[in-house]
Amino acid sequence: MNESILLESQTHHLSDLSTKEIIQLQTEMSLKLKLPKYFSDPMKRGGSAPEVAIIPTGLFEMGSNKDEFGHYREEYPQHYIQIRKPFAIGRYTVTADDFKKFQQDTEWYQRPELLWAKNKEPVINIRLSDMKLYLHWLSDQTGQSYRLPTEVEWEYAARAGTNTAFHFGETISCKEVHFDSTAPYEEARQKKKWFIPRCFPMPKAIPVGSKPANSWGLYEVHGNVWEYTSTRWKNSHLNANRDGSENRVSNSPWYVTKGGSWFDAAILARSAARKKRLDDEMDTNLGFRILREL
Image 1 (cartoon, one colour):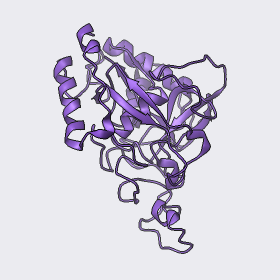
Image 2 (tube, helix red, strand yellow):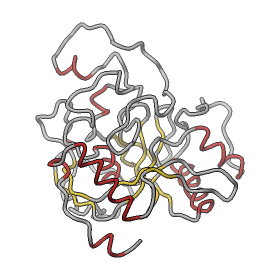
Image 3 (cartoon, rainbow, N blue to C red):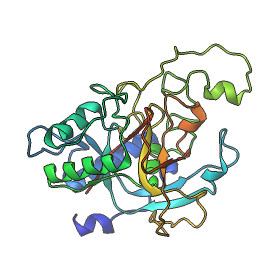
Image 4 (tube, rainbow, N blue to C red):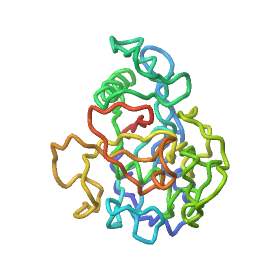
């Protein structure tokens, strides 16, 4: 990357900017990098890698405080982090179609007894080690560096300049987010004991791109499937580095996942929400999103 791009990383406090200004930051960064705002790398086998969106530098507040409905202590304390280096992240979670290309090129074996996604549904029932194999293959196919996002990178990209519970604002409905429709957000906040779900319950993930995107063009960062990050689990944000880097190497088998899912209550789809999952865990509500280094 051009060194001047890093030196020009200004301290944009994103929550002070309008939606239009947030989008403009992304546009300006894409111009500096001489890359489209959204792009896909060509692969040696033919075709293209999953589409990614450029994420500009800036300052944001990570986590939540006790005044946010749904807040858990694991999201404490709120703290400012300066993202000094731009990156690109998947506009969608990796789909069954994306993963099928990897399967065709390798000897990766799909266990027939497990439920499997189809077409544009998020790929599920794969382990963290399988995700890393896919990312290594994708890096080899494109000549670029692909990996999982860190928890910091994931939340920064998902918020897209917002400091509210969701990038949509302080509340959501099942029109914007695919969560367990029997456990909605606003009704729970208002302590309604009886309500009629606004959406028909759907016990599986939906195709990517079905819900509205955030200001940086990322889809389903709230709900649908939990997304693995590369960050080892800690019980809080205490002693977090202000540049977003890891402050301690851990051998914990638990990793941070973000975003909530179709199986969970809406409060777990908040930007700050986090859940620990084992490194060898497989589930029908667990997937991943790629990060492409710039």
